[in-house]
Length: 479
Ligand SMILES: C[S@@+](CC[C@H](N)C(=O)[O-])C[C@H]1O[C@@H](n2cnc3c(N)ncnc32)[C@H](O)[C@@H]1O
Image (cartoon, rainbow, N blue to C red; front, side, top):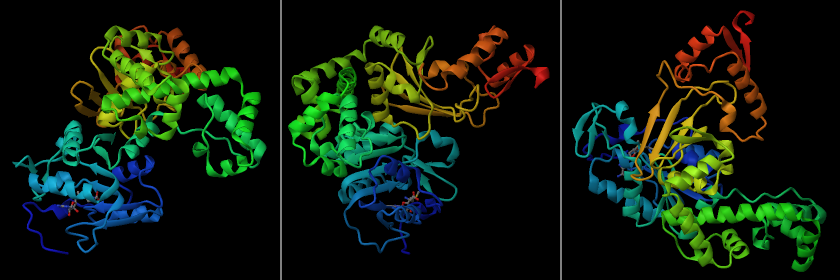
């Protein structure tokens, strides 16, 4: 270990980790950290993430000026800069550190920092642009928008918020666009195939979902081998004979809207040339639009619609899913893709700007002003009236985000009429509807202003002499 002449005792900020850090986990979930890709944990502290990644078969190395100064610094596909920027008290060195980490990344830099909403957990005296704690450690807590624009300014590239306080900066545009596409358009589905017949069935299924024939580059390798002896015309004929035209039509509508959504999100974030788009999206544009220009014009109009209050309100009214209140539309994450495209765009723009939190259940889209909240109800499925744990909100005008935790609240807000948040064909809908109907019959919704929080709801249950057994309402004396 080396002596450092820092203005704060930075080494004390490094904790021992039994599990992967949130940013390292996020980068794995997002398929940025993968077995076979090299990872450098820059400012790795005690090395917990490096050990964890190695156990997962990643080629990971760590460097830290205090704990691992002897590691040879070499470029890596993925560079993690995890909770380092916030502990550096010297703004010039902070910037230099970010720049160095960026220089070492050959594919993506994953930069994370602690956020302003943790303010109540960090006590200390003002020092420079942060706080110096009693242990002589420094913390500059970042705003979500501040972190993103800071990384953009230093790296000179457009970034994406993967999650609150975690920003990805990609070395080349195609990697960035591939990641945006992966977030918006679900992975192509391919049925399992062991022989030519099942491989053709898989292609037919794909065509019915995507609305067009795949190019061989898009087909998984083993399946491509099974199809190799057939010519493209033969495959086209077999698919034409077996695919259900109504399903193909549905598939092409879905793919058209997904392509528009992708291009509109890209415009929100700054759009590049056609050749930079992921291959599958280039092929969708060719299949479903007369030109890239036409696709862009339509997606630009879609993005403009996002500013149009009556249009957004109309889309919320027309949405096949979600609960519309006087202020917002609330939708369960399982039903999010069933919202009208303009509302999906609304939610995606907010998530690219500020990152969706790791755990959330409902998205709340305001219809006056533009703000999205992701609300976490960890027991949504098992609790007939789930209680909120946290809410993370981003304002689309300022791109500022805020976080509210209800963990210590003695009287948490809770949900009623759960079926309204999910899709009508969700397997749970009928069960939730039966419960709501029983609650209405029992008079439990006669005073709606009383039942929005735990205590009020309990009092109303008592008043009506009812209690809940799972998703069944029973008389209290039978309980
Ligand atoms: C809060 S710890 C985070 C450690 C590790 N990334 C993790 O999340 O477990 C901050 C680390 O940044 C390191 N550090 C301080 N100044 C640095 C610099 N200029 N460049 C790289 N790392 C630095 C410290 O030694 C410390 O280990």
